[in-house]
Image (tube, rainbow, N blue to C red; front, side, top):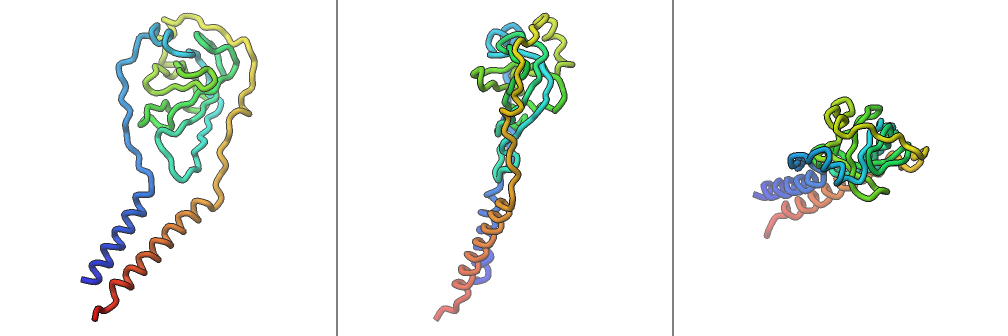
Length: 194
């Protein structure tokens, strides 16, 4: 009976330890997209551009979420609304599970972005699409305008610092504490009762 209690305590401690690690859940559900003209009217910016950099500020974080922001730097080719600069940064959620658009480096996209002009966002539900697959949208949009203001936003993106041993130290500390607590509890359980 004493060993059973000890095993149950260790199992409980193990379950607590496992619960500290993040799990991925899918939660994205999009309504039917609006028409191109409706989206053009509703969005803050509509442009085509090539992805020249992707920055995940939480890349090395202990806990990550599918909703963590990814900052995407675009070289703007054409603009239909809201963009007059040669480069723009748009953020999106890390994963499609949180309705983020999973951009790829050096590929061109038609981007429908919303939010403040200084902090544009887009996602899976916003009609954003690979430029090569956006022919119907481009036919409706017509010819866009070439950016008039040359900018270099590369320095605006913050690359995450690679962690040293901080996560390893954290994991080892948690495991050590769990073993000490388990050991103390087992010692108390093993004491013969008088």
